[in-house]
Image (tube, rainbow, N blue to C red):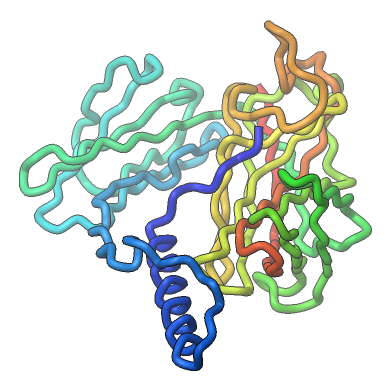
Length: 337
């Protein structure tokens, strides 16, 4: 049930640096007749850095828009050299078939004013490098006829949230300190969180639940799309620290995590955006009663129980080390059918 960290090329560099450091320490101690007992570094210290992987992606890859408002998608490439050409395509059958969009051959595709006929449209861009097909990333557009209901918090005061650390694999609950600071955010006030990673495990997990973000489908309508956004930063830059963040949904004694979690590792504020769109399958159950066969779990229907929102932090780093990070401009938008 618990999310695992995505693979990061920088981790190889970090492990290489650790190996080099340990070899140096052993050499110094060994010259004085002692030994720290470190194991041999192994082949990883001699392993060359792999070449960066060429890639292409569309931003945003999921977007929710109100009828009559614009929508825009841009494709970017990384570690790609050569002449680039683009052709945007659209599918209205869930991605079974795509058709070229006439005249849309730039890196950006814009729709001046979306309508309900654009709902659930899947967009794809064929990227050619030096005339050869190389990439075909896609994106999803959702359209709502009514404005979304917004829950947001830009100061994240401690009294407005409940905090639930989760025992690690060794059963130890991580220590954590949460502070609401008046300045240094993006901009202004923000929340700083410091987790102490327990010995015997390389991670700490904590739920943060907003006390003022409850949506009741019975009175406000069935849920169509839930959009989540936050600004985050890491205060201890190192390749050995990985912070994951995602939307949390609580309903009927269960806690669900969005499948669209993202990493937050930069030392400057950045926007984390994920969207739990179109289906309960975009969430996974973390704890609470198991979902019965055929049960909507979570339930987005008009007869569903109220749902409350929050965010999840999981920090991976060296056991016994502390990791400090921050969050600002927390926002959840619930779009109705």
